[in-house]
Image (cartoon, rainbow, N blue to C red; front, side, top):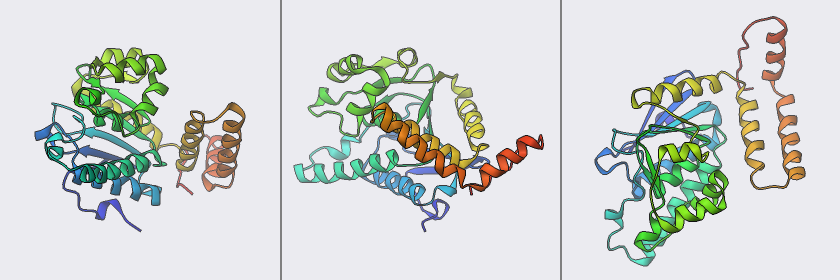
Amino acid sequence: MTKIDDLKFGMLEISRLADHVMVVTLNRPEVRNAFNTQLGAELLELWTALYRDPSQCRVVVLTGAGDKAFCAGADLKERNGMSDDAWRQQHALFEQMIRAMMDCPIPVIGAINGPAYAGGLEIALNADFLYAVPTARFAFTEVTIGIMPGASGTQHLPRAVGVRRAKEIILAGKPFSAQDALDWGLVNKLCPPEKLMDEALETASAIAANAPISVRQAKTAVQASQSNDLKTGYDIEIACYQRVIDSEDRLEGVAAFNEKRKPVFKGK
């Protein structure tokens, strides 16, 4: 089974800054962390490895290198002059990467350290929730260059900010501020740049201290609420609940409560 620590990435930086917390950094600061074919392939490999073996960490914090941007979107210099077939093949890779991120069972916190435009905003929207610096800006600029969002932006943005506002954002292609993102529910919290990673890691550590199977099943149940009617969603919740009953961590959690001590969860 693929272990992330054994993988050799050129455009992703992987670090572990707290117990069971993995920090993933988009590492192309010279181009505002725009993603090209290689970075798309590396992200696909990362999310696939976590899907296959979620025990490799309990939380991911996703951010961008440098202080200029979280991610400027797809690298248009690489795309300049691409044939239609080459464009479609590259986009198919990006589609696989986004689907793999959607399927990641582990919570992903986005630490948005600067502008997140186009595909960069789509990557951010696939995180479970976002913290951002006050100077971050967001936009779907695709229609201004003759394309459209194609990495789940038209699906995630309406769920985050509402259909009518999402249409305005996507169809006009105009940027909006971090404060707007906070007010509209796209971002959970604004943090000073020097505190962004500390805040994200503090929350990540709190999540990582909880029972991993419970966290993953709860994430699955919450996600189901976005694409199912209430009864079907509840059926999924109950199925997820049944999964945690069989876990050793459930026994440990109840025992620790009664013994007035901190539980030691093993993800089993």
